[in-house]
Amino acid sequence: MKQEHQDLILQATSAQRLRTGCKIQTLWSGYGQIVRVHLQGCERSSVVVKHVMFPKGSRDSDISHCRKVQSYQVEMQWYKNYSTNERCRIPACLAAQSFGEEQLMVLEDLDAAGFPDRRTSVRDGEIKACLLWLANFHGLFLGVPAHGLWPVGTYWHLETRPDELEAMTDLKLKAAAPEIDAVLNNCRFKTILHGDAKLANFCFSRDGSRVAAVDFQYVGGGCGMKDVIYFLGSCLDEHECEKRAPDYLDFYFSQLRGAVKDTENFCQLEGEWRRMFAFAWTDFHRFLLGWMPGHHKVNRYSKRLTQEVLKKLTESSDGAKR
Image: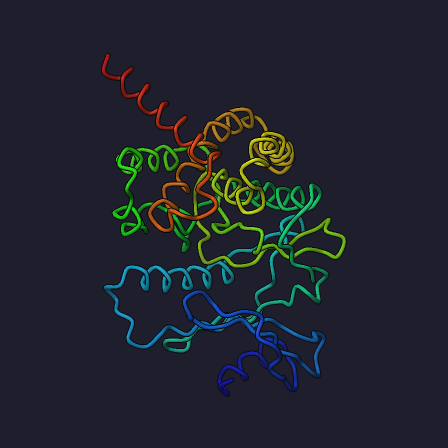
């Protein structure tokens, strides 16, 4: 680790010494790594450092590269300027700084904070713990402008994925993609989205009853259903979605009701977002068909919801022509 990076960590933590520990993971497409750093001479025993390194030779004309660069800039802004509470726990940011083509984020170690477990499969209570986090997060930021973040959150947002749209072979869905995007973007009720709320980005307490979330590269504005459908799709297969998604949606809204400040308009919010459930799912399905059409999430449940949305759009268009 470079001396200037060590100096930032020592200054941010008031530690006397540090030692680089294990690599937690490599960032997507080789854009750096996340490591645990052990500390001495301060209150904290460790921190987690997200070290972003933009690859040499990447071109500003490369859409994928530009999207990734912006995503890390957004994440820096998120940690610098936004905070949550214990009901939607995130790691505290101790420092976030750019060093030319590198970025360093010094974050609280959630393992040490009581969230040491990761899950690759989850039971009912653990799914509800994540949905509770999402409900509290969306309720906290309901109506809050996404200043410095993605104007529209999620990594699959249509405007940022022209290559995937072009690659689609489902021409009917491809043609409807802008209208589906507009329906979601024109929601009356907007919040700030996590933007990548998959199971792998939640850290669990040992008993699985509490969670904290990480990875805010695609945090931004939008309809809360985008986070909900993406999370459910990350931990339920097509049969489980058919059977259990309605109950989990009910649970999410029961928790969101207690998290929002404006309870007078909650019925309108719930009605609008419930209508957006299939649109949000179809929007992600659109991305998968252009990115990896053989993905296991391209399943009968997703296809059924997509057909329902396309039918609604057709009926709406026909009605407008009369």
